[in-house]
Picture 1 (tube, rainbow, N blue to C red):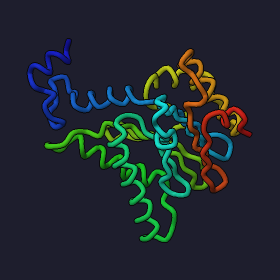
Picture 2 (cartoon, one colour; picture 1 turned 120 degrees about the horizontal axis):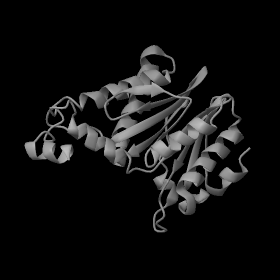
Picture 3 (cartoon, helix red, strand yellow; picture 1 turned 90 degrees about the vertical axis):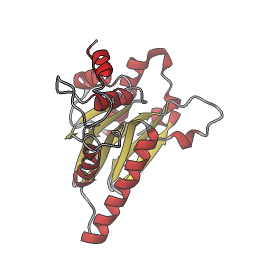
Picture 4 (cartoon, rainbow, N blue to C red; picture 1 turned 120 degrees about the vertical axis):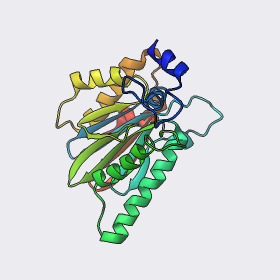
Length: 234
């Protein structure tokens, strides 16, 4: 009811306009867009990080590999998104440029947090300037810089570090299960099994392992695994 009233009064016309209750409605609309996107789970395991993503691409005419949402940012950072894919593509390309600029400037690999912070700054700027809308995408970054790390950045430009997290459709249900089932020090195999188990519990009859892609960071390398190969993963 409040949203309808606010719309009628025009408080959702720009990202620069606050509603009387302190909300920025354009930002809240963008947050709803994220929950229409396909789901991904990130898990920090012993000596590595896993991202498991639901491709949600069931059209036989589409080449499956083109729908993979797990992207390499640097040789020690990967990223997955939920929301508007074209918005994510712009930010992913920006993250890659940030990583390469850091290497050229400092002759060293950028930390995952440094990349996430700059992307978050860009997202925040689009919540306060007129003539543009917020990026309709949430992004999860996994990286290894000595320690294994997992960060998530939201619409507003906030970011946090996690042991395990989920973005996209049914994210709250997935996070509830992660809180119940996740333990520190999981093996790589157990992390993959846990992520698949949670997706199976949430999706029920719609679950098929064929729809999932995994990106795994460990020992200085990035590995991608898809479909049935996930069930036999060591």
